[in-house]
Image (cartoon, rainbow, N blue to C red; front, top):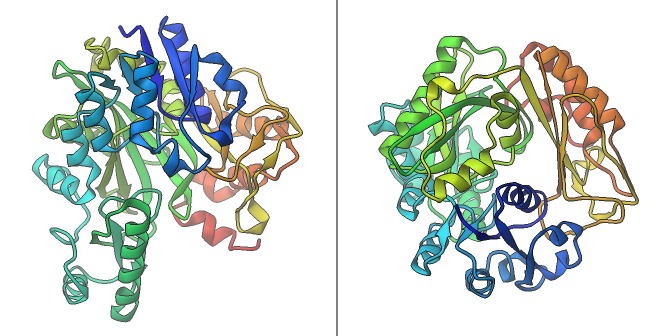
Amino acid sequence: MFKRILVANRGEIALRIIRACRELGIETVAIFSEADRGAKYLDLADERYCVGPAKASESYLKINRVISAAEVGNVQAIHPGYGFLAENAHFAEVCRSCNIEFIGPSHEAMLKLGDKNTARKLAREAGVPVVPGSDGLIADDRDAVRIAHEIGFPVLIKATAGGGGRGMRVASNDLALNSALSQAKAEAEAAFGDGGVYLEKYVEHPRHIEVQVVADLHGNAVHLWERDCTMQRRHQKVIEESPAAHISEKVRREICEAAVRLVHVANYTNAGTVEFIVDRHENFYFIEANARIQVEHPVTEMVTGIDLIKTQLRIAAGEPLAFKQEDIQVRGHAIECRINAENPFKNFQPAPGKIEQLIVPGGFGVRFDSHAHAGYVVPSNYDSMIGKLIVHQPTRREAIECMLRALKELRVEGIPTTVPRLADILRHTAFNEGRVDTTFIERTWPPGT
């Protein structure tokens, strides 16, 4: 096992990694930007280094500064968390060229799965269903129109290097396609430095189901069952749960087994997530793979009892998986709500500022993963999530009731949060009965409501 690692991230996930390391007897080195200077969670690390100004591109995304901190801190490995450099194949390669282990997949596997177009080809090789679409990147507008007519409107334009809904547009006719294509390319170029896009048939009213996988360096790969991430707004996940409700056991097993096949074909190691959409007839299609730990990993931890961060560390250190597929059972039901510093009544406008008071809920089966505290100033420079509220109960009905109670207990004073809208969703009959899709939030609560 490693003796000392650097955590190349900030906030909630940095604290989560620091805690896991401490329990394993691993020392940690934290990095921070000027915007995060003085954050209390940094005190839990053994050492701390500033890597630049508030702007992420000059701090958390600056590879040379992160590597310099790792070398000064004399670490053996780097954990990237999620976001920032977590899926940057070049960063993973640089780490290992500097004799620092990257706690994640190889850069070769990351390149294969990180590029959505290449990942689709691998999925086909693994016998995993993919959404009908272009065989490669779109060359020009004429190429896009031809393919759209072949697969049929509506179509979805997706950035090959994208994520979080950026570089993604829906088009229902030729005119809309030409306009959306230029917008998607420009957005992808600005966000990822890669304007490449491809087309997929737009599956209307889908559910979003993803499978947690882990694979060691000895050829062992397993799934930790699935999560339902259908509750989204503008392609950003809002509520996640495990197991997925309202899908048949047959489809549940098929989708999980498909994810493991893809992992084997890609020679993938460490933790990752394979994402699918499921239509109204329970046909499922691969859409992308995330070569990192996910924000919503706690719901999987709660129902399986497996600590995914510790598992990542052990895999990277060369240890074989401590469990086999048949050992992984789902017990009960877990739900996670992302608590964001946003105003849900003003079109989810970001609301950075000082948290005057924070009262955290508790009780049986309640977990709150957050770096925030009373007096903490939410910066405007990064993602607006300030915490994740997770509950685990014997049944889905009990989990929903527990979450509603916990949301009512949670008090964040000084800034608006998404808590009121989260409670609205959990109380909605359609959510409780499973009659939802990825557009549910925007259809039910249009902007301004």
